Image (cartoon, rainbow, N blue to C red; front, top):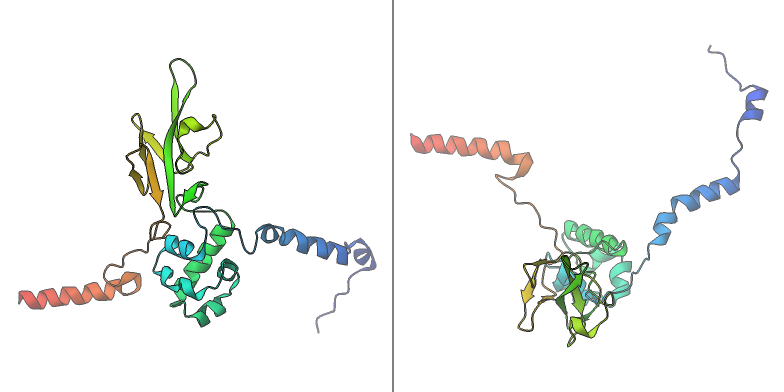
Length: 224
């Protein structure tokens, strides 16, 4: 028989004691990141309600907007509860849950940082700063409806990420449409934030070899 090994008394004395307070501290440290994220994040000017959120992330989720009674429900329902509401197939639920988490973390799509929005449309203008007699810097800002850059002091208007100035006054960027008043406007559009799915060729990775083999056989028969 194998001899049983008992820990020595010295080893027991030198072994660090794990107290309940230490365990609680470790648990708090592990959950700190999750605790910092709000369960139900507040709406944003560009994303004020459930329908707009589902419209932006695309994949036909807008049709499910009437199933959510409130903004809180959109961010509180579990995957099982979403299934009971009829959010199918499962990959659609996973996609919605993934975008919910990204919204909590502030990882938004284009236009998510816009602060002045009216009826789903934001106005963009070019603001120019003279750094020195030779250098001029131009960047895109978001102005309230009916206002212009000259109505505000330097630094009062929020800069907009994802858009740039081409040439003297042309604003370029996703979904930016030029306006008669100058500048551009961005309007909530179906699928603005959508993660596009890849296109399967010859049945995807699992069946590709089989599908191409059958194609070659069919081609040879056709040649004969």
